[in-house]
Amino acid sequence: MNMKPSCESCGIALPHGAEAYVCSHECTFCPSCTARMAATCPNCSGELLRRPRRAAPAGDAPSAH
Image 1 (cartoon, rainbow, N blue to C red):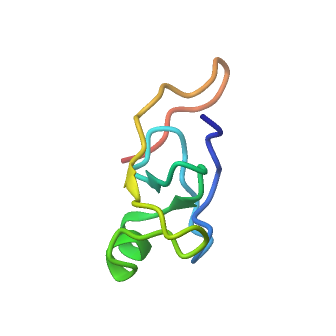
Image 2 (image 1 turned 45 degrees about the horizontal axis):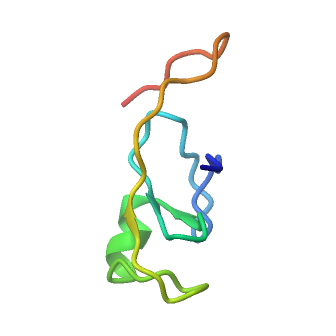
C-alpha cells in the first residue's frame, strides 16, 4: 500500500501512525474529510476504509498522536 503523506482534500499531514482512510485505489483522506464526504471517495466513488497503522521507517522520528 502506498502510504501517502497528506490528505488529498485538505492537505493535512498524515504520518505513518496517524489515522487515515483509503479507497481501493489508495486515495488518502484524513478523518475529518472522510466524515464530510460520508466515507465515499470523491475520485472513484469507492468506500473509504481506515488505513492500517504501520511503524515509521527506520530512522524516522515517531509521530505524535
